[in-house]
Image 1 (cartoon, rainbow, N blue to C red):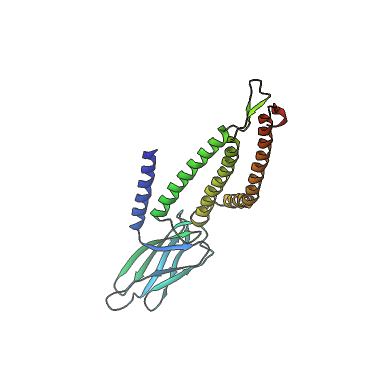
Image 2: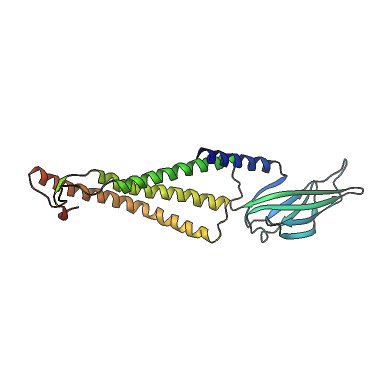
Length: 254
């Protein structure tokens, strides 16, 4: 487990290092216009002209090609229409700039995400550690909820209750706690997906499930306390019968 975690952290670091070596225009939001900029000058003035040779999607499909950039006071620009910014990932821009005696070839990339932001190494590590911890807590909570007994103590014939099992209260709570942990994990997953990933048609399903679970949070909390109260009243009645020397029948209770 430690080796796997170390490999994941090393991979995140290497990806971050490699990405930092690329020339990038920045990170932009999906379905929004992007201003492509190029600076080109000699010792005394700007270049005469700059053209975009091609802009490519992350899968290398060409979006536009051979288009002139507009010359401004200090740079050249071209606005990429939002109808082209429809895919998450790293886009590639290639172009040339001309002067009277020189031709300069240039290239850079830009990233497109749902939120217009990228994961930092620190964020990736934080989410990784938090997810591992929450999943571990969820498994531990479910394990406790499943193995803890619910029924009260019985005699050898399994027909007479001879004692109160108070673990049932913890069992009910652990099921509710597991539900809270699962909702938290799903909330992190949906949040990360909404801002950094593209799950296509699957995303609305996870988002609906999250809203459904959050909507049940307060009603289920009330049900939890109501269930505890009913269990308490029943156990109190059974305890009184045991103290009076009566033999409460198991089939009359649980």
